[in-house]
Amino acid sequence: MRAIGRFYSAGVTETIVEEATKEKEEQVSLDDLVTEASNDRIDNAPIVKLANAIIENSFRKEATDIHIEPFATETKIRIRVNGDLIELMRISAALHVALVTRFKILSGMNIAEKRIPQDGRMSQTIDGTVVDLRVSNLPMVYGEKVVLRILASDDSVRRIQDLGMTDYNYERFVSCLKVPQGVILVTGPTGSGKSTTLYAALGEIAKPNLNVITVEDPVEKKIRDINQCQINEKAGMTFDAALRSILRQDPDIIMVGEMRDAETASIAIRAAITGHLVLSTLHTNDAASTVTRLVDMGVVAYMVATSLIGIVAQRLTKKLCNDCKKLTMSKEFDNELLGVDHSIEVYEAVGCHKCNDTGYRGRTAIHEILLSTPEMMALITREAKADEISALAREQGCKLLRDNCAELVMKGVTSVEELIRVTYAV
Image 1 (cartoon, rainbow, N blue to C red):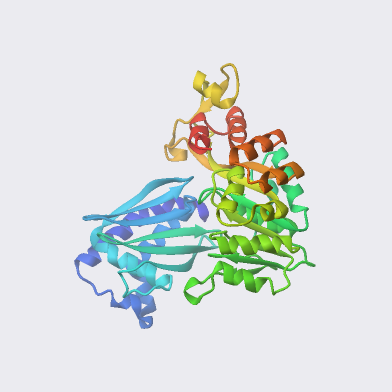
Image 2 (tube, rainbow, N blue to C red):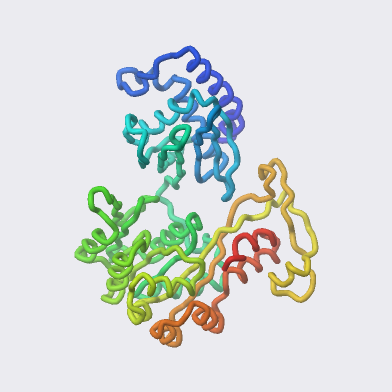
């Protein structure tokens, strides 16, 4: 059924777009879309079928985001697959308002409000799987742009072994999780898999005899036997307010979705010092700069040094398509990046129909894990610069993001181009 859905849906979508366009041209009233008395008509309305088809096609192509973008004469629909946006379809601009209205109804937004951004959430069943979507709406010049983030919908949590860590990094990460109190930070840019790593860590350490509480915005994956708290800033439920309350809930392990400000960071660090295990994320380029970022946010350096267990910096790198990757020899510039003194066999991306002519299929994570040691604590306490922290970390066995990615290049998993794209700035 999944295979039939995947190959049949493309042709069906074209028919649905034609039906929706024809209906719009005939000026059929869209009032039925917002009345509960006409459920049969709603389910069969072409615009409803189009909204469903967009989500179904995107899910089957393993997309993470859907972008519905209005322009003067048409609406472009693009999806993000393996980190890149690819075009799914284009529809008439006349259909845009009806399509956006449909998504706003499903996600609980105010359909009359078109001047300010809104956020919502919805779900849809595809091939027997319930798919959760986070919906964001933003007014543009030619109408409202809608972005739907496709979230993992089941209760299953990835194991740490499935995160793509090397055996060396896996041992270092597990050693961090065995420490009963302190703070473990996962850093990286947006969309680098930080939440997945945190959930995997919680799955490893959450036991029936422990009280685990999370503070998230939004709650991306609902996990059994873990207390999850949703942030609502409009109602005054901010990260720091939630965190203060959580400390009165007798927690053993606290997961903070993100350290966004000095107040949240300070409370989380104090919680770690007072006997709790705290896991959180931060947006920094590498592990070493995370320490200086915390100090810049206003957390006292000795408190960072005392509470820190370890820092995991990570990125997602695209994997070469096994059906079309091409063997070549590395050039002089490549050798310098790879840390070798002679040309070696590497693979480069080509592109075929199986990978949408991108040359890549799927992604894997690369990691850099800094551990807190007495020497590292002394360095942090005296507010050392990031390059000093990085140098000591390397001496103590920390393999940098570039080292991890270079290893994947030499194994034929990814390309030199990806090595440059992902790690050149770090």
